[in-house]
Image (tube, rainbow, N blue to C red; front, top):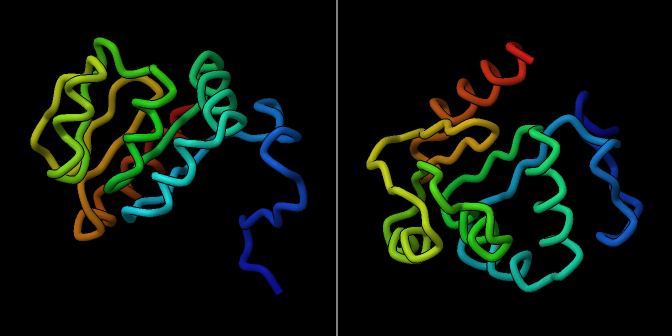
Length: 128
């Protein structure tokens, strides 16, 4: 039995559509985002999701996926310390804070910030 609110994914990345979702959460860790950022279908999905104005939430190393999607120019965000130079090189302004919300993008630095991150995501969704 799946927890309430969880989605069972039975489609490949090239089959998912922005209109089917209210928000996208990109997981952290070093390897998850590194694999996602090299998938052209995931990058296209993130670009389309960003254009829709729907919520994109990324924690830890996950903002590198946003950098690969080329959607960070002029945006304020945070991320794990060792990816901050990559985010800056992608055009972002780095803010040293547990959570940063800039429009439809919410980012967080580390799993120790997950409570603040979760609250920011909840607040954003409740406002919409």
